[in-house]
Image (tube, rainbow, N blue to C red; front, side, top):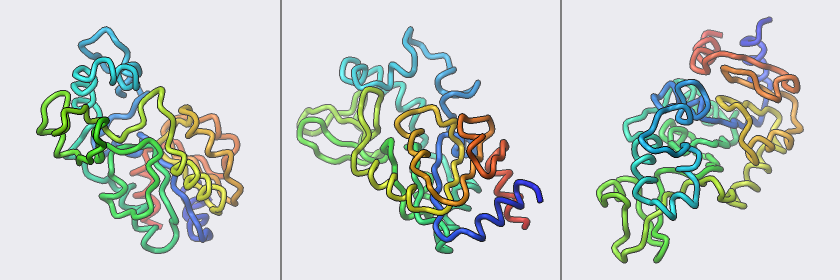
Length: 242
């Protein structure tokens, strides 16, 4: 029995699956990841500043114009569509297999695919709020407001995305840990598991099947029951043949 067959058997055997997803899941939708050779952190930009610094809270507050130029160019993909893997996990939710998706992604593709219970631990590009009066704006609203987008009250609008130097939302952390600690199968997909505190969530898993689907190795490979280093959409195609 190969790893794909083992994965299919484990999915069939499981009653509560949690999917924990990272940027590698969305690369087939045309959204670059962060750390690969073609990822955001390795792309050339027209400023003598590292991308990690640009997407920090302090840079956003000090240079909102430059932040938004980078953000709109590199992190917002209005035309991106869910790929086969997003759709597959949404279908597993419809079948009562997947109880939730815990995602590090901010691209809204899980929801577009049909997943209902999505915990976005790093926030989302779809929601934005004025830092002065707290008025809500959706993504299309702020795209028409120039750079940087400002509220009708004059306040600076900030995307509901967790930037460097900012903490994760406590409610989202608690929901994610509750889901992970109570599931019998955790599928980790498209993440190198190097960003904390999110990477540490894996330690709360106490279930039967720990699955790692990622193109490259991770620090948790030796702890997993099933490890597949391959493109996740190819893995899904193989699963659907069984």
